[in-house]
Length: 159
Image (cartoon, rainbow, N blue to C red; front, side):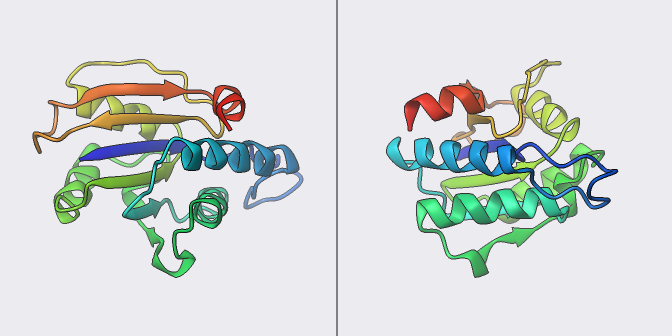
């Protein structure tokens, strides 16, 4: 299974938008990252996102570019900013029959998920709109392999 972990695009300041939707720059970041995903042949079988507005907007923009049905996006609290790894384990188990999952979330939970999958305390700088790919084809948590981790700018260059 390939797990694509994506941080939402840059969000508006809470003073500007209390529920912090994507900024114009965030929309540009995500569209560029989605374009790179399409060019790289990344076709998610399932897109799962946090229920927060900026994550839902990010998932929707990616879905549009990679031709994934918007209505099939699944929301999960396991991808909220401070979600515990146990919720993620349950989520992964639920969809273990899928080959390519795109998970759109936040910090610090994306780093927690990455550390959990790789079996070590791994510090990765997840920039807004950035994407990491973990190969967990053996089906065991804590036995994944980091395939790549790209910033939004690197994704833009690939697009």
